[in-house]
Amino acid sequence: MMRTAIYPGSFDPVTFGHLDIIHRASKIFDHLIVGVLSNQSKQPLFAVEERVDMLREVVKELPNVEITSFSGLLVDFARACNSQVVIRGLRAITDFEYELQMSQTNHIMNPDLDTVFFTTDLKYSYLSSSTVREVAYFHGDISAFVPPLVEQEMHKKFSDMK
Ligand code: ADP
Image 1 (cartoon, protein in one colour):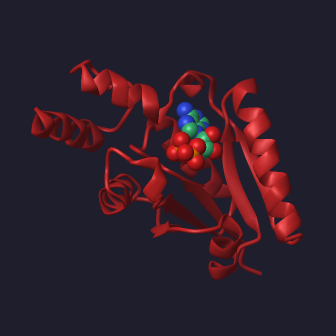
Image 2 (spheres, protein in one colour; image 1 turned 120 degrees about the horizontal axis):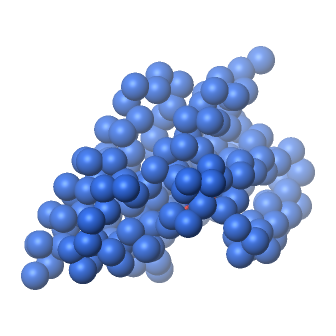
């Protein structure tokens, strides 16, 4: 039986922390579908198509990883992907309460759906897309946080805004 897992998130933008989870999950599951959330109310820096394109580029050497966008409920996206496993990363205690609540809610909506948590590699436990956006906004060096392609796209984005 082929095991498909989904890894949902905003990925605004994708960081080395996300990539670490993608690499590790892609070794455990036969097929990993990264779901990029298209959320109108969240007002992202990058349009969903831009986030999908950047992710595709940075995971192109992983043959069993697929990138797609989704909107609406995670349980519906999981069903559409024929997946019973949701991957999430846990960085710190602060992630825990929210993640626990989400995973329990999803499990009640679809009892076949389970969330599998990956504990973040210590070297990325501080890293979040929002701090990367903040540093890039002030033209700080983000090369330790994101792949070179993302770094370029961030700098383009913020020079366009000026
Ligand atoms: P969301 O807006 O849904 O939290 P994110 O794109 O911020 O989406 O994160 C998607 C997933 O990746 C979440 O499970 C989050 O905990 C995890 N994640 C974010 N940053 C890191 C990191 N530095 N290391 C490991 N996992 C991370």
